[in-house]
Length: 216
Ligand SMILES: [Fe+2]
Ligand SMILES: [Fe+2]
Image (tube, rainbow, N blue to C red):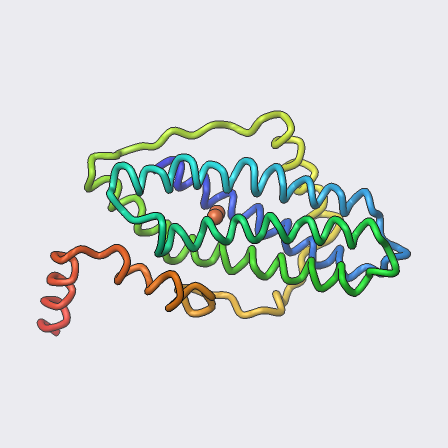
């Protein structure tokens, strides 16, 4: 499905720019180009939030709810939307400590690191848990394609600036945080989400699963 392919490709770009942001955050405050910090913030706000997260919410997640009858007030979709809101809020703290310069150097570095790790976990969850389930479930309900849109000029500009920042601040080879597949690192697991199978599977999917396991 084209929209899902687009969103997945955007993840590659967003995670690269996030890695570059970690490299930028390690530069001492008195040597830091604040305007580059502002470009990072513009990328995360305009490209990651306003373009990427918005299309997930207003098109993909809306189709899961309206066309595939999946719950969005709890479970995987609610978890992803809550992440979007939480991560957008983290950018405000990052902006304030970036502009404060040297007196808030440690606060900026901690806030930037927390944001990048949250973003990476979010991308890992969408790539490994949520997105692979979306196409088959939508197709089963007669949805073969979903609308998309190209970026606005501002979003395109933020993307180009983000790509330039990846060249200027190469992402660290070692991410410094555990990444991977599944729900393991998800703070919502067992709180507002019991895992995709328990939230989304219907009776016949469980029957089929039990048959398969019984047949091994
Ligand atoms: Fe997302
Ligand atoms: Fe995403």
